Image 1 (cartoon, rainbow over the protein chains, first blue to last red):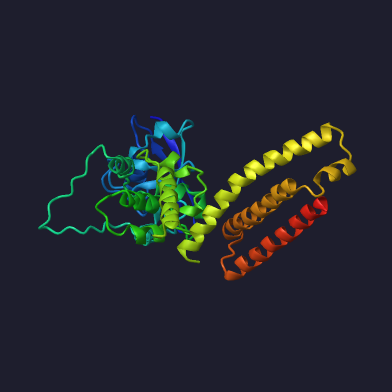
Image 2: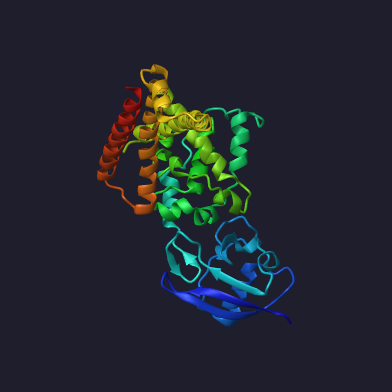
Length: 237
Length: 112
């Protein structure tokens, strides 16, 4: 049976790679490899996963230098010499092995006012939003984020400016800015403007290139720049 | 710095960039024309001295530079040097004044 040479990050920020030999299988995913190591070779390996089908966003890791969702990444796709290097996501503090501390990632969603603020009560009728309306189409294009932090890990601006809210939080803010039912857009636009927000994006598009859901946070951030500028010019910012 | 000021800076940098695109093009075409035409320094000064149109054009050019460069440097200082204190903006404001002073000195020298 063929085998894979796998180097896995062990320890915290000051850790090191440890080598393992893992049996190679057809249709094997990177998460299968990590799971094999923990179950058969070293039960002390720490990593996260939940759904295994690309919905929960908890299994993202750096695979051969590229941030990916490991449950939907086949080894065939990333490995042409039977060698894998698996590390925790970049731009987040490492707790242990392949597990990162996601608090700053999700705290930034809160700082970007990433929660819906509606005004209707249970006594009101539903809002009627046409599926083909411009705002709804823009929301649809950005709404399927699973919060995996692959974009955050891929972003060079996050690496250089620790205050930067990052692609996922800004993408979330964009979906709410374009949601006609939301009532807190002025506060949201204030929250996402400036050095820590959309104005710091360099449009490198690493987030868009690496997003496993094929979303384009870059487009959302550009939209936020337009909305913030319009708010400023209209005096509502 | 509040969101309004930061948004103003962002718009100012984009607007000055658009202006600079045009100014650089006119400047380069003028320079190439002057060099290829074999104009001497005295002939060039003869055309710029007292010419209000050239004075106005290069004044706009200098002001666009004085707006654009410090705002761009601000982002570089934040991301590359990690300089986040208010002192950074004071230094950049002084730098903008220096750019206006230096640029306008050159513009005045060819206008006289």
